[in-house]
Length: 113
Image (tube, rainbow, N blue to C red):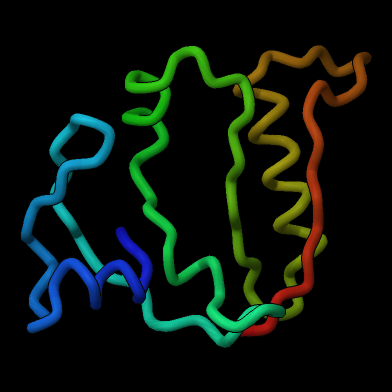
């Protein structure tokens, strides 16, 4: 997936889905283009310039990276449940024992799009 601004620059006539792009020496197939996000603090929203690749692909391509950022959006009224589900999944993935504290951080943002 690519952000709206990137989609407009790379595929000005539209039809980006199914086309390929080369990023950091690797070829990726665009599966979709995000809808434009509302403007950011200084104009364009950074989400419009984002590139999203599958998690496992990122782990293989960038094994040296020790910071990974995941973004999730909870359904209305289910934010607390979503946070606990994410926390539980990360603890399991990272094999954190039940008697130990999280070895990761969860940051919360209120973004209205």
